[in-house]
Length: 153
Image 1 (cartoon, rainbow, N blue to C red):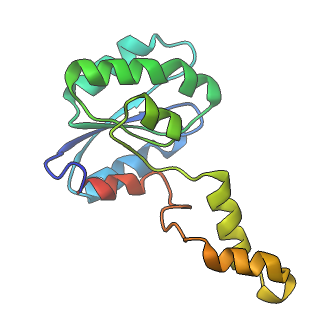
Image 2 (cartoon, one colour; image 1 turned 45 degrees about the vertical axis):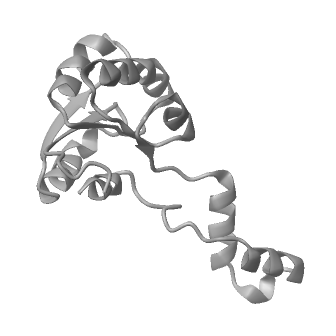
């Protein structure tokens, strides 16, 4: 449990994830928390859009979107979350290193490992099979972003 007392969850959505606004809101509500949804696009001033949501949230989750939205808003999310003492649960190692409380992400190595572990054993060379047996399996490797909400409970 990362934030067992969290009751207000802020979610940042960009143009690509905006059509799923209702779905994300339902996931938060089904987890027994209040969604604070904020939509950001390339024309917005990130501070004006993000600050009210982060100020009201107990935890903030930026949903992955286009590269432009992620790069332009990441620094503001972390600065505002620090100002208002709101932890961020993100989706990349870079966010984690920059100050997010936690991140749910998959490295290329985890994706390759998971893919090869599903591949029929008869078609994988023996050397690769031995390597697969020696590697740990990471259960969070291919989990949808909304599942991080469940981790907060």
